[in-house]
Image (cartoon, rainbow, N blue to C red; front, side, top):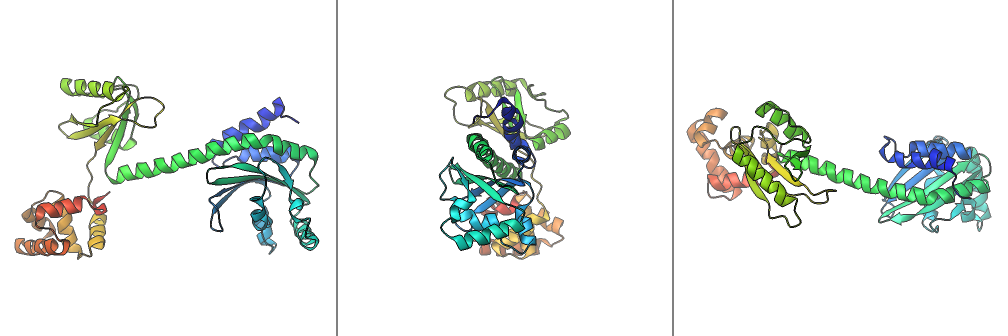
Amino acid sequence: MALTSRDETDLLLPLFRGLSEESAFSTFLERVRRRTDAEYVALIQRVGSGPHAEVSTFHAGIDLRARALNADSLDIHALDRFHYDALRPGRVYAISEFFDHDPVYRADRAQRMKQLGIADERVVRLPDIEDVSAWLVMARAKPCTAADSALLSNLAPYVEEALRAHVELERHRVRASVSVQGLARSATAWMVMDREARLLSIDPRLETWMEKTLGYHPRIGERLRDLSVQIERDLMAAAIDFTSDEPGPPRPLLLNEHPRLEALLSATTDMPRRSMLVLCRLPNTRTSESVDRLARLFDLPRREAELAVALNEGQSIAEAAEHMGLTLETARNYSKRLYAKLGVRGQAELVRLVSDSVAVMA
């Protein structure tokens, strides 16, 4: 039995809208539960294989797992999930089909299901999405009907596509989150511009810095303000180049001299439209955490690590000594011990080593 126009409105729209719900697919699963008068409807997702694979369950209705644990019984679905891998994708199975060969186990399982308020279940396996396996499960206090099985069968292809989008979206979210944190730690911010050097998107950190430091709020759809004529021309030329069919190699550009704002311009990748990526370095104020991390990484006394960070910030040994409350001679002795411990030949190599270290990330 094919899905009706009512099903499309009541079930399919919530299914795909469920990609952006705080609790993914919750409305869709609740609609299916109500339509079938089920006690429990779940979408079970497993990433990877083996006993330590990550399993996520989106469900509507009673929480069978919690109910099983409260009843001092094994979670029936966790117990039986090893059977799920043997299911043929797209076909709807009655859970009882797994145990017809074992009447003792079947009777014991039926008793435990009764204690949970469940009389019958149906499950359909979705085609694997790379390393992700998934099953749509329904459990009722009454025997399941042919209409229940038909509904699961008809929904399966749509759930597969929605889950495929969900998996891809979650992976993009993870990559985006890691990228944002990595850029922030390295004091790097970004802008994306179109062919005419108008803003398409901007890092909130850079937006805030420009507003506080340069005195204006950059707006989407507009060009940057207060640029010199030459810098504006260079930015426009770069935008044309990096949105062309054959963009050139990345190029640097000084966007603002006082205060200094440098940028590295390049073509974007994996974007829906051709655009130019503008990476900027923001002032990265070191903290006591930088000193602690450097001390831990290189097994240094904290005062020596503090001197190394100060030198990395551009201070001379005399300036660092005054700032740290040391005599010049003591600071020089610290520096000599640093050179020996870190295997560097002088202040320039020390600064390079510290600059390349994760210790000085924000």
